[in-house]
Amino acid sequence: MRIRRILTAVIATAALAGLGLTGAATAASAQSVPSVVTPSECKEGGGTPAINEDGNYCKGGTKDGEQVD
Image 1 (spheres, one colour):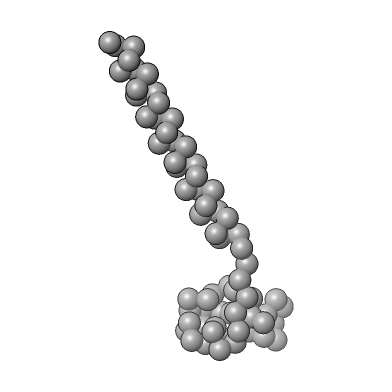
Image 2 (image 1 turned 45 degrees about the vertical axis):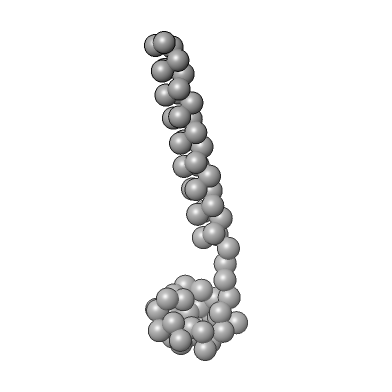
């Protein structure tokens, strides 16, 4: 009976650890995809398109750091 409880606890722990790793992988892949926004999308998000600077990025707002096309 004691072995059954230990085995159940080990299986439950492994299942929860697997779910945590899956969630972390999903979050990492979602953040690693670079997005490109238009100057108007940058302005609508409250930012300023820095088109003449290196990289052409949106500064500030919800689109901060995203490349402006």
